[in-house]
Each structure stands twice: as C-alpha cells, then as structure tokens.
Length: 127
Image (spheres, rainbow, N blue to C red):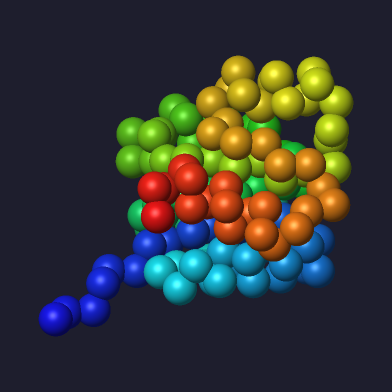
C-alpha cells in the first residue's frame, strides 16, 4: 500500500509560543505537514507558491492581520474555498461575526486547548 498523501496546514501567528502550541495540536493528527508564518504578509507569500488544505490564523498581528488575510484568501482562486480557522483573544461577538461574514470556517477564542484545535480541524476536513 502507498503512503497516504499528507495534508498541508498553514499556521499564521505572531507569538512563537502560541504558534508552537497550534502546530503541536495540528501535528497530533498524524496526516499533516505544517508550515508556519508570523503574519499575514508571510502567509500570502507561502500561499502564492504552495497549496494548503487548511489555514489557522490569529487576528491581531503586525503587517497584516488575520481578517485582512482571510479576505485575501477568500478572493484567491487557488485557496478561496479552503477552511480558515480564526484563533484569537478577540472574544467579542462583533469580532466573531466579522470573521464569519468574511468567510471564516471556525472561530476559537484563546486561551486554547490542543484538543479544541484537533477537534475543529478534524470536523472541518472530515478526518
């Protein structure tokens, strides 16, 4: 039997500690290769040359925030329909509604648990 094709996840988070936690959570699902970006600009560079199955992003980041990134991804032919998970400290209903209106697939409020991320990714990709 051939090896199952790896799924690719892109984690966009400016805090190295939080980024590691999210990467660790996604990698618990043994089917993932994970790329990392520290802001939306870096993420767009990766998205321009590579294909991803899911994107997990913070909102509050320098250079380009997660909502701008989400808007750009949704306008992109190549990645327009991939699931985008927002992981943020912004717990207000208005922030959640704005993200969902822009096309977020899920919204997780920090502090996060690895199991929360795993379940969300599993659900969105039917794993």
